[in-house]
Image (cartoon, rainbow, N blue to C red; front, side, top):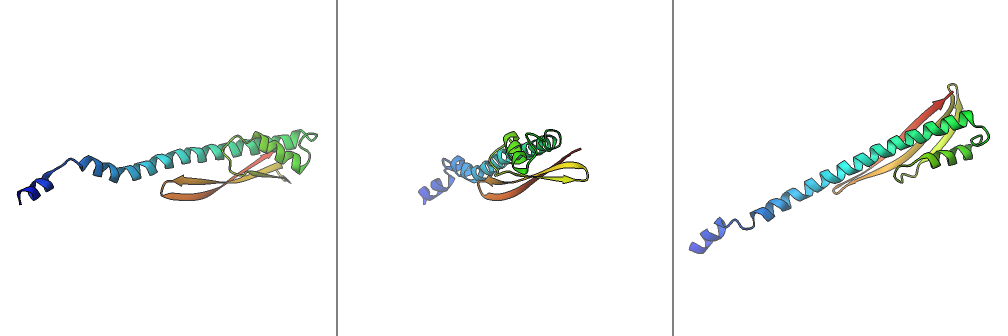
Amino acid sequence: MKSMKRFFRDEFGGSAAEFAIVVLPFGALIFAIIHLCMLFYANQSLQFAAEAAARCYSVDSTNCGTTGAVQTYALGRYAGPNISASFTPTATGCGHTVAGTGSYTVNAVVIRKTITLNATACFP
């Protein structure tokens, strides 16, 4: 009976048990923060590429006069993570508009979510 009391009072594995409980939520939090930063970077880069392509579509008709040329120019300006970005130029009432879309997957250990990013820019 004496050895059972000593066994339950022993605290040598307490730190390992606490670490095992805390490591999964902490790891998920760290990966979520990293992926959210990458998501914001992808969104900002998509917006920049759409704005640059809309300006090129409006101003430089020799290099960006066709739909394919605008898409190629916009993809060249996009510098974010690989989100399979696509750009669509249109002529609207406000001038020349370029819309960009892409989807980013947030993978935070226990959560995996795909988020669609959209960016639209118009240059008169």
